[in-house]
Image (cartoon, rainbow, N blue to C red; front, side, top):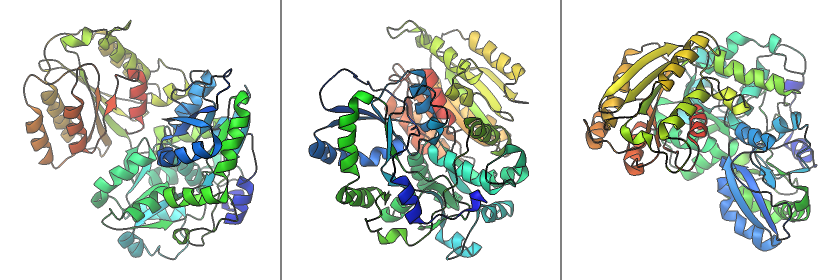
Length: 530
């Protein structure tokens, strides 16, 4: 079977060394500057490639090409490039298969692989010994059995925002497919997939944040699905309580080969200079040493940390519709059902326009519209409330004013969408700001939910708390809680980033800045963490 085909590293490298015309994942802001003559490339890259930044000056010095990098998620990047919202000269993401499946506009001019990192399983050393996985061949099916026996809890990114999550979902789905050499959703063992994903106890929108969050939650987890490079870097950093044993599942996953994808044909000469330098043996060695990614050149000797393992590359599905079905099935059928809390500021300052055409409260309404189906883009559809999701909306000013909970009965549930839209449309700014009283209310409500759902709280505020409980009291109370839930604060307007960062830090969440990015886009980003 194609999905069980073992591919040697040499074969993977040889295959990856060729130029392809498959697309790359992207998003963010850059300009193509198609008519200029200066040696400059605007590059839209995956967030995990921030570890390349220290090497950019060397590339620029060697080639004379200035590189301006911005970062984005995989699917959101593709969405923005295909829609024309973003026009970078070059995209640099983990893989470009998804983009290439429907590049009807022929946006991809050239594509060259630059390095390699498979998505693998990192398992705590003690757990790997307990399960008998050290030095043994392990399959995704073995992992499912360990999950079913309640012996394995893991962290993984969301396939809606991160390529490592998407690659894992494809590999895992192929492992539970009983058809020939192409994934056919009708032949997937849905029950086994659901069982597998019940073991996912930590969700993330990015591979880097997942690594950081894993370290903070190490005692509650047994391992992590992530890039080989991330797992090796964690071990190298020696900050873990226990090292992670790299496990390479028999069925594999989609191997990241980080293609540098030319989108602006007028920049071909500069692109070729950069590609040629990146693929020199000396620079490949630097990439390997600095980022723990494998060299694309077969003549570069692998560092000892990679061992002598065979890599298995799960073929990417032949149609985007198949990939989209996998993602939607993960969201609506297989992953642990979520309970998401939205704690929304509706104080008097929310009527400010910040010099734009919309008030802050209108921006909140637009963001809630994304969650209830107003955005028909690829990322908009993936951001909608999921089937089985439980949603609690709390609005506050001097005190909590609106507090309603809804259960999604099926995808795009009209009853829930309509009820949330009504709450949104009825929002009227007024009153002072009791942030921490509202958060305490959300936490207390979460305590009452004993369904075992994956819980998270989104706090959106444009001011500093001036009523009720203060920040220090909230932090102290939170630290004493047995039932801890990650909080994701969004700040806008006059909100204090420092104060909201304390909330994120104590809860293990992350802050988001809606002063520099549209609030609906921020809500989309946060969906990868819920």
